[in-house]
Image (cartoon, rainbow, N blue to C red; front, side):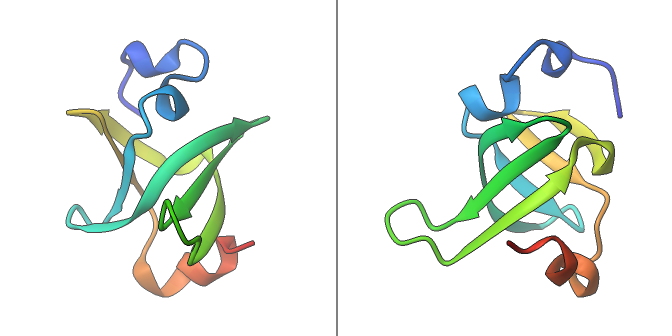
Length: 80
């Protein structure tokens, strides 16, 4: 992960950062950080999907977006 201000506390969650895979597909927003994981929820008003993704899968953080190193086909394994 690229070092940035994201390393300080709950930065991802406090900004409700969009979570992006494949550099183009938004899968939801970061709503919380739990231990070494990000809680990502797709659909703010009506929760459609929820993911628990390890912070180690964050590729980079930029423009208040979180880019994840996860393929679309393996996304199901992080669903909660």
